[in-house]
Image 1: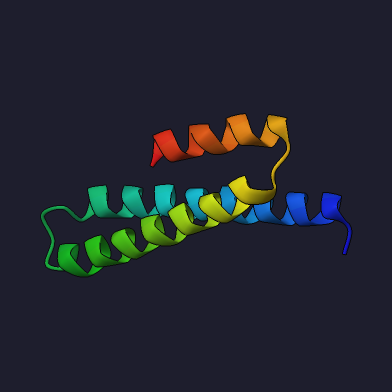
Image 2 (image 1 turned 90 degrees about the horizontal axis):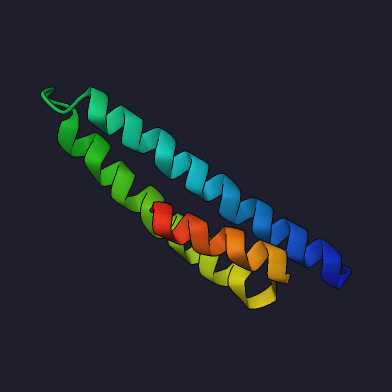
Length: 77
């Protein structure tokens, strides 16, 4: 697999992970007063943890342009 493809796949995985975490955050906000809050919050913690790991992996192989965006993702989380 080419280095470019590795960079792209790592970046895409990080971007996707952040989107999933943000989507789960919206779910948690919508159920804050519901019985399902604990379950959804636990799921959010898992999504954020996975996204952080994906960002860290992507930072190891990313281009300069991707690096800036990945740092933005970290700040967003």
